[in-house]
Length: 125
Image (cartoon, rainbow, N blue to C red; front, side):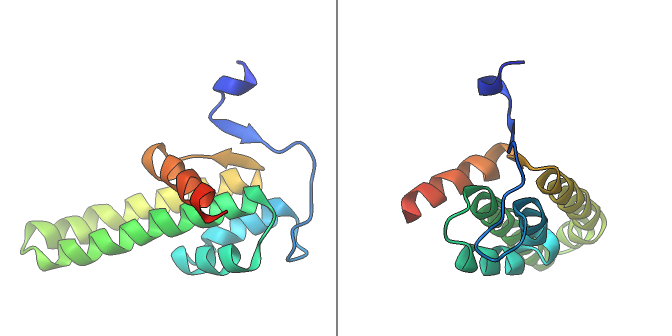
């Protein structure tokens, strides 16, 4: 597979971030507490694009999960069932996958959130 068609871009060598952490560890940590650690790393990491991407994707994905959960809890019966039965396992799976991919130094983009995150980072420059 050609590198241009690969949705999982790999970073070739371990690099340190401005926080002093290796970028794969910092990338993983952006997901640990959901959008909270995403915000923290987006604020403290000014140069490393890999970490900034994962921080922004964390904010977008887990912020969306949070908002969806709030909205579903307002909807009687069906919304409550979905927010209690479906959303938690789904968010757990997404959380684990994103942390593993970041630790493997892969810039793994979720279909909608990944592109949105890249666009937001481009606007912040």
